[in-house]
Length: 206
Image 1: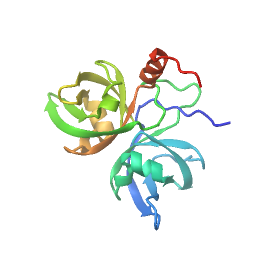
Image 2 (image 1 turned 90 degrees about the vertical axis):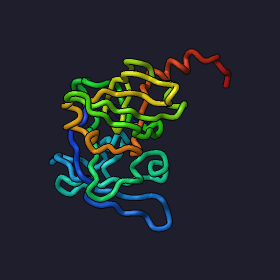
Image 3 (image 1 turned 30 degrees about the vertical axis):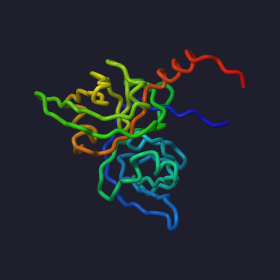
Image 4 (image 1 turned 180 degrees about the horizontal axis):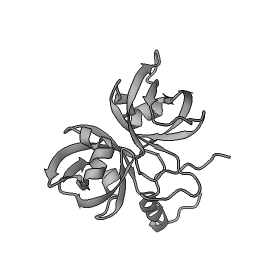
């Protein structure tokens, strides 16, 4: 039976990519990430920029992951390069505090950074989303950007964007401070929105 993995969207560490290795003749690749975790277990799940990956090998605090062709095609992980920083979160354990929201580590699609504007000690970040992702977004709803649980300030269908307010702690403890205009980000919409959509759709018999 397949196990259920959950995350909370609360980033535990921002760490650099140690190396990237592409598989000959395919678009698959392997990456190694420096982590602060000294108790890594073979087969455990870690969200890397919001994508749930399996630890294929570990050497000390360095975790190695295999990226399938599907992961490379559908997420921003295919663009990762040596020394690039990434958000890390280990899977939720029974008894852990759910400080963010339910995050599966299943990337629904990609967004594009359109604007980053300082505002006092915080930052306003505008992310451009395709209609198929933006349809699940509502003002004050939840969304996961590169594994970070966030509250949507505003949805603009006119510009095709969502607006996020990034507080100083989030700016300092995630890769948001690395963002440049045009950067691609992994997006996971709120799973509750998808369930509601399905339940409200006309029932179709198999």
